[in-house]
Length: 66
Image 1 (cartoon, rainbow, N blue to C red):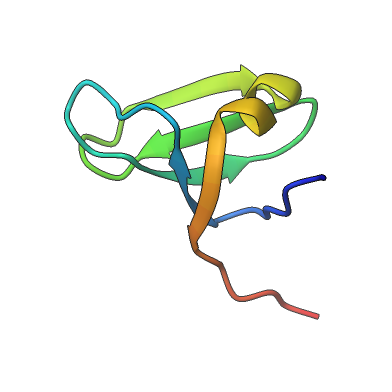
Image 2: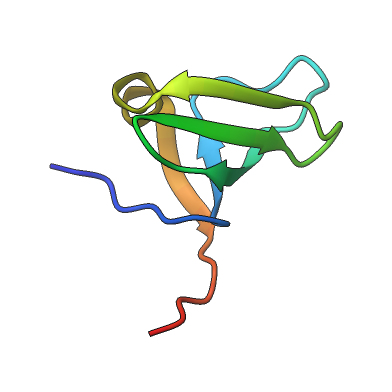
């Protein structure tokens, strides 16, 4: 089952960030995905395959412009 996520969605990861917050915003998508911690604003870039394994669920879906 493929998880659906889009640019600017806020997602929950399996492990929290060391600052204690478990909410991350997707700020770049491609072969690698850049996510930014909603608590301390630290950003991390990880491969898409690793992101899909570590993501739990979408907390806040960004409005899609169709």
